[in-house]
Image 1 (cartoon, rainbow over the protein chains, first blue to last red):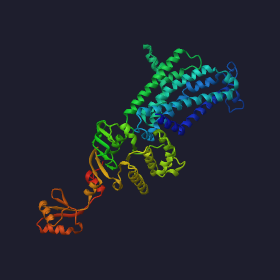
Image 2: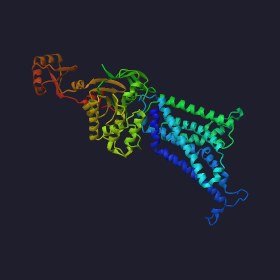
Image 3: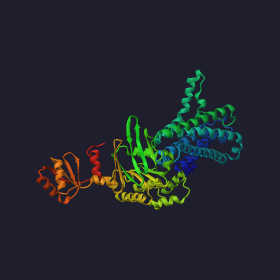
Length: 274
Length: 302
């Protein structure tokens, strides 16, 4: 299995999509800061002065300094992670990385070469998880660097590093299960169009659907969204993490991850490689 | 007998449709086994099962005399349909990926193999810009990377130009002669196949219809004089009286004479003089393609 992992890692390093995803994350972080600065500028009426006819009323009672300071670096990070921007890119990458093995036919080079199918699938999953964590890490680093650059020392000093570490830890665990689900979808569909559509569809619509399910099932006191990784990711607080949430988050994420691993291996062992 | 591949009743079903039906194949060590069949006859599916890419519904398989298939498949290299290549990588990068996956410690093995299939000069050219022949050669290089004793090639010369076909043919002959690699190869280009194959298997609608050696094919396809007569027994007696001993009776009322073809008229004359009515007399002889078309019913389509 070490050999397959080595091969997979080499592939990641040579995979253009991986670098595109990293760049996309960095650009998204930049755009988010840019948007917030725009809001800040608009609130300070600057674009209206000699602008193109847009006049923005100043709301004095809200302007206790630039708006960007009210959001802070953690706010941007929260937007990126809780808002599913990063996980969206992670899922797209996972789908492409897994499904390309089938569309390029390269999976044939390793299946039936003395390795068990389970180890082939697990290697792919592990390296995809690792790549997803790199994407998550780049999001974090970009948020900090850009925040430090744009907000200065004050922005960084406003951060509680201990709480940030706890928040990132939770996000890593939850993201691992979401990546696992994306890998599973890739394995089941083996088609780029279907895999990416289904994975992104899950990310975009599942939380809303489960919120609806919560309402429908409220008479039975059942809230499925409490155990769904994407809902957990959305509600994960940047500060004041409660033990109950941590336990529920870890438990649910691991359960989904193991389910994805089990179903993925099962399918890979039973399905023919074409 | 030393078999590299031996299958017993190997069957593959997709739903109710049986694609490969109880195939008993025997590939001996050192064979270049030409696997022939129409499109959809079950060749690729059979090869996939042997390579471990598809699971059989029924039947057993032995590789190198063992049923421990997962272990034995380390000794098998395969190129099934299209080569599995990363289009955005170079030939070297593709080979490096496989080298790592197969756990080959020598980094120089990549260059050696590229040299062997004459792709060492491709440099930074991405696989997506390769010609069909280059891709096929790279696919073969990947199949050969773990120094297999048994090579499975599904249509390796499909889409190649004559020069490319010749290159692959020469490469396969070299592998078989120099490295004693046993080869199972399928192809629709039967003329090419007949230039390298030492044994044949013909599959029709998932059933392995026949297996025979090159010599047997040559015997069956050799040039002859075909005679349709009214009395085969009498005709045979006359032939023997005239010292013509190389003949057979493939079907009632027909004789095939394999000697003295330059003097076929003499045979006709002797038969007529002996009171046998010669209804038809003509020269015949087939190549692999003709034999295959006869066997599978040439006019029919899939």
